[in-house]
Amino acid sequence: MACFLVPVAEAVVTTVIAKAAKSRETESAGSKPGSGKGRFETENKVPFSRKLKWLSNMLWGGSALLAFEHVWHGEVVPWFPFLTAASDPAETAEMLAEMATVGVSMAVLVTAVWGVMLLVTNAMEKKALKAQPALN
Amino acid sequence: MTLLTTVFAAIICTIIWYKNAPQNDMKVGILCWMFWGASLMWLVDAIFEYAELQAEYFTPEPADMLNDFYLGLSVVALGLVIWLVILLIKDPKGVVRTTLFRKKP
Image 1 (tube, chains in turn brown, green):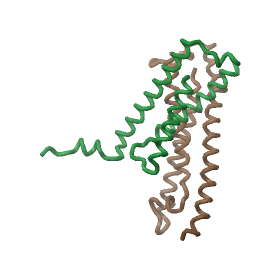
Image 2: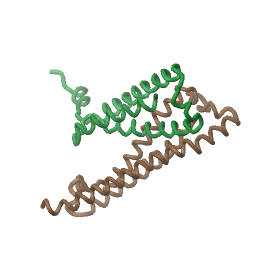
Image 3: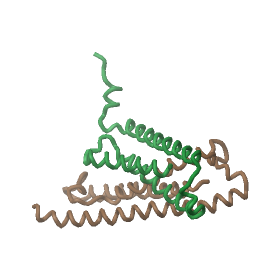
Image 4: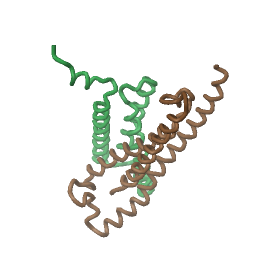
């Protein structure tokens, strides 16, 4: 009914945090002498803002396609109140229940998969950092 | 069927991305994130539907299956359109800029 709104809300939050993290990373990279753009690449460490962007990309992309599915099924319309279920109180309650179950589960699963990706990336970063002195 | 179609699209895009990595001129990564995100969300939808319908979930009516497949293809088409728009706006190869601002001899 409107389950995609939960991942959309999470996507908004992650996008804002990613932007803030990126500006902080740029500031701290600029204040250090001999550092700058591409510094993280040479150190084999992916910046947190980039990792957060993976999550927001998945959430925005998935939500956009899911929103299209809702338009397909006539659950989202281009006129007010935009959600067909919002025009009837009984259906609104059902919609909110679906958002609380299906919508939240969607956001949790995407975040959990991203969490696993972070663990794998961190392990790869550690491995690369260990291998670096041997190469030099 | 929609879930399956999106999963296959995600797999194909990931293979294309991996084949061309680390080069990312075509921004195929965008498609990967989009299709994997949608696949995960539809997986949750499928789990909830399975919990409700049980075994009946795996024996859909042919008309429903066709409609879902049609929806899946439309979703893939929409994903490709979104990717194309982002690609042309970001223009990593500078093709659009070169074409637009090329001076006629």
